[in-house]
Length: 426
Image 1 (tube, helix red, strand yellow):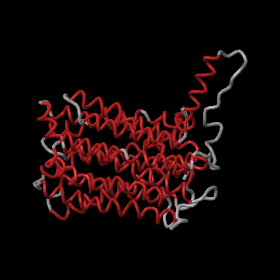
Image 2 (image 1 turned 135 degrees about the vertical axis):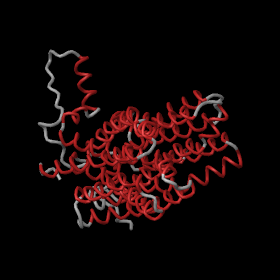
Image 3 (image 1 turned 45 degrees about the vertical axis):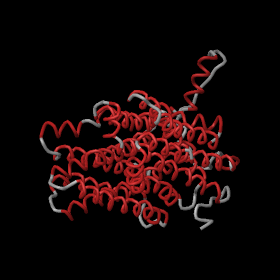
Image 4 (image 1 turned 180 degrees about the vertical axis):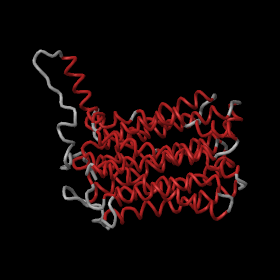
């Protein structure tokens, strides 16, 4: 086991600590977001506000975490991964703790959006970047293990937060959630202890020079122009002119959009087809187990070269797209459970292989920039179009059109995976 994530450039410790950081970040992330969701009725009553206000606040936490992504790479180069992750842990925990003291909904929103959101976003980029630069052997498995934190969070946080809410009230629940989130600081401290290896540059190939930004300076350029070009280079703006990056960004955004919309609207969709809340909870719980199996199993398939990354992604994208589309027409209990399990299984595979494909296409040294800019696009997508499935339901009275849209969005990934293959990029 000690050699599971070992690399040719350093011992296994750096790889394991990077995986631990990603696991902790995904676990804490779902705790903050899921906690707000579970406490929604209580917060609505406490602050005498409307449901959409609290729901929009949760959406803005996700959006903020994506918008700050491009700055993560710059911060790593300046201060190091360990220091920044420690600061992120303080921000995430402090945001939740400060939220427990809020007297109004805007105060709660400000603490979570301005503190917890950016902390989650920057740490997410740096944790995945650290794995990409420090793990060579069994990289897909390393990513899969790290991302099971999200799955375990889905299983653990729901009953725990409900119990804390009934026992201590929402303020103490949010306070304790913030305390749990402070464990991220420990991960940062551990990464700081191996800073000589965790922040080293990789020996992966970079994007070819004709596709990346290369500043041309002359002695006549002003200091301001030089500074601007240096800033653009540090932010990896050159990626925005790279065709492989755009294909990857569209694939990732479509995958995240489809699954994110399913998480938001599945319970309501299941109720509209005659299932109870208890049934929907069982579908999600069983699917959550398959999500963990997928994250652990995809690494074995890809790292053992049973199937290439793009091939497995194509198969799963097709199955997931079909499952989204047929869900509103399923009235049988077991049929709905199978569809929900396939969707959760598909997300488990795709959320890991998105990262694997990113490193294959762009190289390890551009991971922070790629994750950051893709995070911006995902955030904007959530802000601009997340309301559409709900609007379609209001207009039609059912979720058939909505889930056909979600399934079609997932299917778009297949087109760009095919383009990457035809151009011999994968």
